[in-house]
Image (cartoon, rainbow, N blue to C red):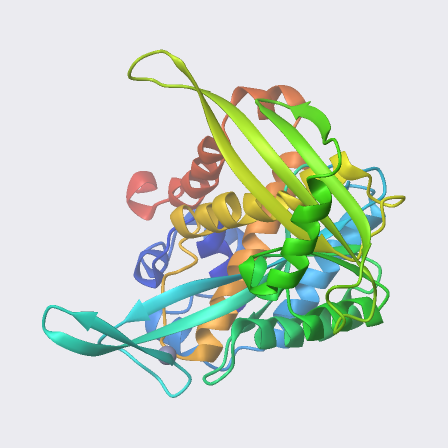
Length: 372
Ligand SMILES: [Zn+2]
Protein backbone atom coordinates (compact mmCIF):
# COMPACT_ATOMS: atom_id res chain seq x y z
CA UNK A 1 0.00 0.00 0.00
CA UNK A 2 2.77 2.47 0.98
CA UNK A 3 4.94 1.67 -2.05
CA UNK A 4 1.93 1.71 -4.41
CA UNK A 5 0.75 5.08 -3.10
CA UNK A 6 4.28 6.45 -3.45
CA UNK A 7 4.46 5.24 -7.06
CA UNK A 8 1.21 7.15 -7.75
CA UNK A 9 2.68 10.23 -6.04
CA UNK A 10 5.80 9.95 -8.19
CA UNK A 11 3.81 9.31 -11.40
CA UNK A 12 1.71 12.41 -10.70
CA UNK A 13 5.01 14.29 -10.11
CA UNK A 14 3.60 15.74 -6.87
CA UNK A 15 6.79 15.78 -4.83
CA UNK A 16 4.92 16.02 -1.52
CA UNK A 17 3.51 13.43 0.89
CA UNK A 18 1.10 16.05 2.27
CA UNK A 19 -0.21 16.79 -1.24
CA UNK A 20 -0.73 13.05 -1.70
CA UNK A 21 -2.61 12.79 1.61
CA UNK A 22 -4.92 15.61 0.52
CA UNK A 23 -6.13 13.50 -2.41
CA UNK A 24 -7.72 11.15 0.14
CA UNK A 25 -11.32 10.40 -0.89
CA UNK A 26 -10.81 11.25 -4.56
CA UNK A 27 -12.51 8.99 -7.06
CA UNK A 28 -9.13 7.70 -8.28
CA UNK A 29 -8.43 6.00 -4.95
CA UNK A 30 -11.91 4.47 -4.79
CA UNK A 31 -11.17 2.78 -8.09
CA UNK A 32 -7.70 1.57 -7.17
CA UNK A 33 -7.84 0.97 -3.44
CA UNK A 34 -11.52 0.05 -3.12
CA UNK A 35 -12.32 0.84 0.51
CA UNK A 36 -8.75 1.23 1.76
CA UNK A 37 -7.37 4.66 2.65
CA UNK A 38 -4.26 6.35 1.35
CA UNK A 39 -1.65 6.21 4.15
CA UNK A 40 -1.09 9.55 5.89
CA UNK A 41 2.06 11.58 5.20
CA UNK A 42 3.47 10.58 8.61
CA UNK A 43 2.82 6.88 8.03
CA UNK A 44 4.34 7.08 4.55
CA UNK A 45 7.49 8.78 5.82
CA UNK A 46 7.92 6.40 8.74
CA UNK A 47 7.21 3.31 6.63
CA UNK A 48 9.78 4.28 4.06
CA UNK A 49 12.59 3.94 6.60
CA UNK A 50 12.05 0.19 6.57
CA UNK A 51 10.68 -0.37 3.07
CA UNK A 52 12.04 -3.43 1.29
CA UNK A 53 14.48 -2.00 -1.28
CA UNK A 54 15.19 -5.53 -2.55
CA UNK A 55 11.49 -5.80 -3.45
CA UNK A 56 11.62 -2.49 -5.34
CA UNK A 57 14.70 -3.72 -7.22
CA UNK A 58 12.80 -6.90 -8.13
CA UNK A 59 10.06 -4.70 -9.66
CA UNK A 60 12.67 -2.79 -11.69
CA UNK A 61 14.09 -6.11 -12.91
CA UNK A 62 10.59 -7.28 -13.80
CA UNK A 63 10.03 -4.10 -15.84
CA UNK A 64 13.32 -4.65 -17.66
CA UNK A 65 12.43 -8.30 -18.40
CA UNK A 66 9.00 -7.38 -19.76
CA UNK A 67 10.40 -4.64 -21.98
CA UNK A 68 13.17 -6.95 -23.21
CA UNK A 69 10.75 -9.80 -23.89
CA UNK A 70 8.47 -7.44 -25.83
CA UNK A 71 11.47 -6.33 -27.93
CA UNK A 72 10.97 -2.74 -26.78
CA UNK A 73 14.64 -2.06 -26.01
CA UNK A 74 17.00 -0.96 -28.77
CA UNK A 75 20.60 0.25 -28.52
CA UNK A 76 21.14 3.91 -29.41
CA UNK A 77 24.10 4.10 -31.77
CA UNK A 78 24.88 0.56 -32.76
CA UNK A 79 22.84 -2.46 -33.85
CA UNK A 80 24.16 -4.77 -31.20
CA UNK A 81 25.92 -2.75 -28.50
CA UNK A 82 24.04 -1.99 -25.29
CA UNK A 83 25.81 0.60 -23.13
CA UNK A 84 25.37 0.94 -19.37
CA UNK A 85 26.13 4.36 -17.92
CA UNK A 86 27.49 4.51 -14.38
CA UNK A 87 27.27 7.98 -12.87
CA UNK A 88 27.36 9.57 -9.43
CA UNK A 89 24.87 12.16 -8.20
CA UNK A 90 24.54 14.21 -5.02
CA UNK A 91 20.91 13.75 -4.01
CA UNK A 92 20.81 16.13 -1.05
CA UNK A 93 22.99 18.47 1.00
CA UNK A 94 22.33 20.37 4.22
CA UNK A 95 24.17 22.23 6.98
CA UNK A 96 21.36 21.52 9.45
CA UNK A 97 19.96 18.04 8.98
CA UNK A 98 22.09 14.94 9.25
CA UNK A 99 21.95 11.23 10.02
CA UNK A 100 24.53 8.58 10.94
CA UNK A 101 25.04 7.65 7.27
CA UNK A 102 25.52 11.22 5.99
CA UNK A 103 28.67 12.05 4.05
CA UNK A 104 30.48 15.06 5.51
CA UNK A 105 32.71 17.74 4.04
CA UNK A 106 34.15 21.02 5.25
CA UNK A 107 32.94 24.10 3.39
CA UNK A 108 34.54 27.51 3.80
CA UNK A 109 31.90 30.22 4.18
CA UNK A 110 31.98 33.93 5.10
CA UNK A 111 31.24 32.88 8.69
CA UNK A 112 34.06 30.33 8.83
CA UNK A 113 34.38 26.65 8.06
CA UNK A 114 31.16 24.66 8.34
CA UNK A 115 30.36 20.97 8.06
CA UNK A 116 28.01 20.16 5.21
CA UNK A 117 26.09 16.87 5.31
CA UNK A 118 25.05 15.16 2.11
CA UNK A 119 23.94 11.95 0.46
CA UNK A 120 25.29 10.69 -2.84
CA UNK A 121 24.33 7.76 -5.00
CA UNK A 122 25.61 5.97 -8.07
CA UNK A 123 23.04 4.98 -10.69
CA UNK A 124 23.18 2.37 -13.44
CA UNK A 125 21.30 3.48 -16.56
CA UNK A 126 20.87 1.42 -19.73
CA UNK A 127 21.09 3.63 -22.82
CA UNK A 128 18.17 2.82 -25.09
CA UNK A 129 16.92 4.47 -28.27
CA UNK A 130 13.52 5.60 -26.95
CA UNK A 131 14.27 6.37 -23.30
CA UNK A 132 17.00 5.61 -20.78
CA UNK A 133 16.19 2.62 -18.60
CA UNK A 134 17.02 3.28 -14.93
CA UNK A 135 18.06 -0.14 -13.67
CA UNK A 136 19.54 0.22 -10.18
CA UNK A 137 21.36 2.49 -7.75
CA UNK A 138 23.68 2.23 -4.78
CA UNK A 139 24.00 4.74 -1.95
CA UNK A 140 27.51 5.99 -1.18
CA UNK A 141 28.48 5.21 2.42
CA UNK A 142 30.61 7.36 4.76
CA UNK A 143 34.32 6.78 4.23
CA UNK A 144 34.09 5.33 0.71
CA UNK A 145 34.56 7.06 -2.62
CA UNK A 146 32.26 6.99 -5.64
CA UNK A 147 34.21 4.30 -7.49
CA UNK A 148 33.96 1.92 -4.50
CA UNK A 149 30.18 2.50 -4.43
CA UNK A 150 30.00 1.91 -8.18
CA UNK A 151 32.02 -1.31 -7.89
CA UNK A 152 29.50 -2.61 -5.32
CA UNK A 153 26.67 -1.62 -7.67
CA UNK A 154 28.39 -3.37 -10.59
CA UNK A 155 28.67 -6.62 -8.63
CA UNK A 156 24.87 -6.58 -8.31
CA UNK A 157 24.48 -5.64 -11.99
CA UNK A 158 26.56 -8.67 -13.04
CA UNK A 159 24.28 -10.85 -10.91
CA UNK A 160 20.88 -9.33 -11.81
CA UNK A 161 21.46 -8.10 -15.38
CA UNK A 162 24.17 -10.43 -16.75
CA UNK A 163 23.14 -10.06 -20.40
CA UNK A 164 21.60 -6.58 -20.39
CA UNK A 165 24.71 -4.64 -21.43
CA UNK A 166 27.97 -5.02 -23.33
CA UNK A 167 29.95 -1.95 -22.37
CA UNK A 168 30.11 0.29 -19.29
CA UNK A 169 30.46 4.08 -19.77
CA UNK A 170 31.94 6.21 -17.01
CA UNK A 171 33.63 9.58 -16.45
CA UNK A 172 37.31 10.26 -15.79
CA UNK A 173 37.04 9.34 -12.12
CA UNK A 174 36.58 5.70 -13.17
CA UNK A 175 39.76 5.46 -15.26
CA UNK A 176 41.33 3.28 -12.56
CA UNK A 177 42.86 -0.12 -13.07
CA UNK A 178 40.84 -2.00 -10.37
CA UNK A 179 37.55 -0.73 -11.87
CA UNK A 180 38.61 -1.64 -15.42
CA UNK A 181 39.77 -5.08 -14.28
CA UNK A 182 36.50 -5.74 -12.41
CA UNK A 183 34.45 -4.97 -15.53
CA UNK A 184 36.61 -6.98 -17.95
CA UNK A 185 36.80 -9.96 -15.56
CA UNK A 186 33.03 -10.33 -16.09
CA UNK A 187 33.36 -10.34 -19.88
CA UNK A 188 32.22 -6.72 -20.34
CA UNK A 189 34.02 -3.79 -21.92
CA UNK A 190 34.53 -0.32 -20.48
CA UNK A 191 34.90 3.21 -21.84
CA UNK A 192 36.04 6.02 -19.51
CA UNK A 193 37.04 9.62 -20.10
CA UNK A 194 40.83 9.90 -20.15
CA UNK A 195 42.17 12.76 -18.03
CA UNK A 196 45.56 14.12 -17.04
CA UNK A 197 45.99 11.76 -14.08
CA UNK A 198 46.81 8.99 -16.58
CA UNK A 199 49.62 11.24 -17.87
CA UNK A 200 51.86 8.54 -19.41
CA UNK A 201 49.05 7.01 -21.42
CA UNK A 202 47.77 10.40 -22.54
CA UNK A 203 51.23 11.60 -23.65
CA UNK A 204 51.81 8.33 -25.47
CA UNK A 205 48.49 8.64 -27.31
CA UNK A 206 48.91 12.33 -28.20
CA UNK A 207 52.39 11.63 -29.63
CA UNK A 208 51.06 8.79 -31.83
CA UNK A 209 47.93 10.71 -32.89
CA UNK A 210 50.10 13.56 -34.23
CA UNK A 211 51.61 11.12 -36.77
CA UNK A 212 48.25 10.03 -38.24
CA UNK A 213 45.47 11.67 -40.23
CA UNK A 214 42.16 11.95 -38.36
CA UNK A 215 38.95 10.13 -39.28
CA UNK A 216 36.38 12.83 -40.09
CA UNK A 217 32.60 12.52 -39.76
CA UNK A 218 29.62 14.68 -38.96
CA UNK A 219 26.62 13.96 -36.72
CA UNK A 220 23.82 16.54 -36.51
CA UNK A 221 25.47 19.92 -35.84
CA UNK A 222 28.79 18.49 -34.71
CA UNK A 223 31.71 17.72 -37.01
CA UNK A 224 34.47 15.54 -35.56
CA UNK A 225 38.11 14.79 -36.28
CA UNK A 226 38.93 11.54 -34.50
CA UNK A 227 42.09 9.59 -33.79
CA UNK A 228 41.64 5.99 -32.77
CA UNK A 229 44.47 3.58 -31.81
CA UNK A 230 44.59 0.19 -30.07
CA UNK A 231 47.27 -1.82 -28.33
CA UNK A 232 48.50 0.65 -25.70
CA UNK A 233 50.51 -0.98 -22.93
CA UNK A 234 51.37 2.24 -21.10
CA UNK A 235 48.86 1.36 -18.35
CA UNK A 236 50.28 -1.98 -17.17
CA UNK A 237 47.98 -2.28 -14.13
CA UNK A 238 45.06 -2.97 -16.49
CA UNK A 239 44.90 -6.65 -17.44
CA UNK A 240 44.20 -5.92 -21.14
CA UNK A 241 45.85 -3.66 -23.68
CA UNK A 242 43.78 -0.51 -23.99
CA UNK A 243 42.48 1.61 -26.85
CA UNK A 244 42.58 5.41 -26.84
CA UNK A 245 40.23 7.56 -28.91
CA UNK A 246 40.56 11.33 -29.26
CA UNK A 247 37.96 13.64 -30.78
CA UNK A 248 38.28 17.30 -31.74
CA UNK A 249 34.70 18.51 -32.12
CA UNK A 250 33.31 21.62 -33.76
CA UNK A 251 29.72 22.50 -32.95
CA UNK A 252 27.96 25.19 -34.96
CA UNK A 253 25.52 27.24 -32.87
CA UNK A 254 23.37 30.21 -33.81
CA UNK A 255 23.55 33.00 -31.23
CA UNK A 256 20.05 34.22 -30.37
CA UNK A 257 21.26 37.72 -29.54
CA UNK A 258 23.11 38.43 -32.79
CA UNK A 259 21.60 35.81 -35.11
CA UNK A 260 25.12 34.90 -36.19
CA UNK A 261 26.59 31.40 -36.36
CA UNK A 262 29.45 30.57 -34.06
CA UNK A 263 31.74 27.55 -33.89
CA UNK A 264 32.51 26.01 -30.51
CA UNK A 265 35.53 23.73 -30.12
CA UNK A 266 35.82 20.90 -27.62
CA UNK A 267 38.34 18.11 -27.12
CA UNK A 268 37.58 14.63 -25.82
CA UNK A 269 39.78 11.68 -25.01
CA UNK A 270 38.63 8.24 -23.90
CA UNK A 271 40.41 5.07 -22.77
CA UNK A 272 38.70 1.76 -23.43
CA UNK A 273 39.03 -2.01 -23.59
CA UNK A 274 36.58 -2.43 -26.47
CA UNK A 275 37.97 -3.41 -29.87
CA UNK A 276 37.48 -1.57 -33.16
CA UNK A 277 35.81 -4.60 -34.71
CA UNK A 278 33.03 -4.36 -32.08
CA UNK A 279 32.77 -0.57 -31.96
CA UNK A 280 34.20 1.25 -34.99
CA UNK A 281 35.34 4.84 -34.42
CA UNK A 282 32.05 6.60 -35.21
CA UNK A 283 29.79 4.39 -33.09
CA UNK A 284 32.46 4.41 -30.33
CA UNK A 285 32.46 8.23 -30.13
CA UNK A 286 28.66 8.55 -30.25
CA UNK A 287 28.24 5.84 -27.61
CA UNK A 288 30.91 7.42 -25.38
CA UNK A 289 29.01 10.71 -25.49
CA UNK A 290 25.93 8.86 -24.20
CA UNK A 291 27.26 9.28 -20.66
CA UNK A 292 27.01 13.04 -21.03
CA UNK A 293 23.36 12.70 -22.09
CA UNK A 294 22.52 10.95 -18.83
CA UNK A 295 24.38 13.45 -16.68
CA UNK A 296 22.81 16.47 -18.32
CA UNK A 297 19.37 15.25 -19.36
CA UNK A 298 18.62 12.18 -17.22
CA UNK A 299 19.44 13.57 -13.78
CA UNK A 300 18.13 16.99 -14.80
CA UNK A 301 14.71 15.54 -15.67
CA UNK A 302 14.65 13.35 -12.57
CA UNK A 303 15.34 16.25 -10.22
CA UNK A 304 13.38 19.00 -12.01
CA UNK A 305 10.15 17.17 -12.87
CA UNK A 306 10.24 14.00 -10.78
CA UNK A 307 11.39 15.66 -7.52
CA UNK A 308 13.94 12.89 -7.09
CA UNK A 309 16.20 15.01 -4.84
CA UNK A 310 13.43 15.75 -2.35
CA UNK A 311 14.16 14.25 1.07
CA UNK A 312 10.83 12.96 2.35
CA UNK A 313 12.40 11.28 5.37
CA UNK A 314 16.03 11.77 6.32
CA UNK A 315 17.42 8.24 6.64
CA UNK A 316 19.60 6.55 4.05
CA UNK A 317 17.08 3.71 3.70
CA UNK A 318 14.17 6.10 3.06
CA UNK A 319 16.20 8.15 0.55
CA UNK A 320 17.19 4.95 -1.28
CA UNK A 321 13.59 3.69 -1.30
CA UNK A 322 12.17 6.98 -2.63
CA UNK A 323 14.77 7.05 -5.40
CA UNK A 324 13.92 3.46 -6.39
CA UNK A 325 10.21 4.39 -6.39
CA UNK A 326 10.96 7.38 -8.62
CA UNK A 327 12.96 5.16 -10.99
CA UNK A 328 9.97 2.78 -11.18
CA UNK A 329 7.55 5.64 -11.91
CA UNK A 330 9.92 7.17 -14.48
CA UNK A 331 10.28 3.84 -16.33
CA UNK A 332 6.52 3.10 -16.22
CA UNK A 333 5.73 6.57 -17.54
CA UNK A 334 8.22 6.45 -20.41
CA UNK A 335 7.33 2.86 -21.30
CA UNK A 336 3.64 3.82 -21.41
CA UNK A 337 4.34 6.86 -23.62
CA UNK A 338 6.57 4.88 -25.99
CA UNK A 339 4.67 1.61 -26.21
CA UNK A 340 1.02 2.40 -25.54
CA UNK A 341 0.35 5.77 -27.14
CA UNK A 342 -0.18 6.10 -30.87
CA UNK A 343 2.60 7.98 -32.69
CA UNK A 344 0.18 10.77 -33.64
CA UNK A 345 -0.48 11.49 -29.93
CA UNK A 346 3.22 11.24 -29.01
CA UNK A 347 4.04 13.78 -31.72
CA UNK A 348 1.19 16.13 -30.80
CA UNK A 349 1.97 16.47 -27.08
CA UNK A 350 5.10 16.97 -25.01
CA UNK A 351 5.95 14.51 -22.26
CA UNK A 352 5.37 17.29 -19.76
CA UNK A 353 1.82 17.75 -21.04
CA UNK A 354 1.18 14.00 -20.79
CA UNK A 355 2.59 13.96 -17.26
CA UNK A 356 0.16 16.71 -16.31
CA UNK A 357 -2.72 14.65 -17.69
CA UNK A 358 -1.65 11.80 -15.37
CA UNK A 359 -1.65 14.26 -12.47
CA UNK A 360 -5.05 15.67 -13.54
CA UNK A 361 -6.50 12.14 -13.40
CA UNK A 362 -5.63 11.96 -9.71
CA UNK A 363 -7.36 15.28 -8.98
CA UNK A 364 -10.29 14.79 -11.36
CA UNK A 365 -12.49 12.96 -8.91
CA UNK A 366 -12.18 15.50 -6.08
CA UNK A 367 -15.09 15.03 -3.64
CA UNK A 368 -15.80 18.77 -3.78
CA UNK A 369 -15.93 18.80 -7.60
CA UNK A 370 -18.49 16.02 -7.62
CA UNK A 371 -20.55 16.84 -4.53
CA UNK A 372 -24.22 17.37 -5.36
ZN1 LIG B 1 21.90 11.77 6.26
